[in-house]
Length: 152
Image 1 (cartoon, helix red, strand yellow):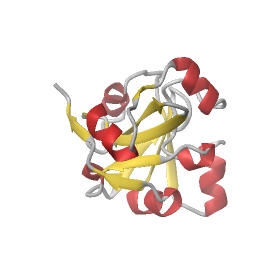
Image 2 (cartoon, helix red, strand yellow):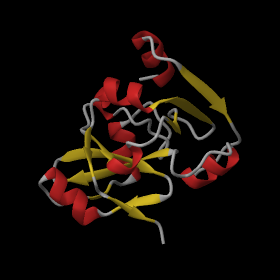
Image 3 (tube, rainbow, N blue to C red):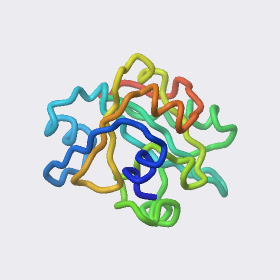
């Protein structure tokens, strides 16, 4: 799935932001002068025979115990091989927050609800997309719950 083609098809306003290749969500946020609170990173987790996507601010991390309770089974961070298999057209670690397009349940942390816009990776480590949070929720229809805790 090309996220830009998907958003075009859905008639959603968005902006593509090219940047130098970066690998952590906080690095991307800093390079684009975006708050880590508005940069929506994706964390891919595995539980038994299922893959899950958790979307949260770059400034936070997934509490795996809370995530496990949320999905009803023990989850752990997915391996690179798991990510390549579930998101074959994305660079590992650059999955856009549209798990529904890959048959992966998507959970969004409540801390993003107050954002007017979000910025997220567009499937590569050198391009992001900025769009309205309301448009994102309308398209993805994620489960919204509290599972993220502050870094550090």
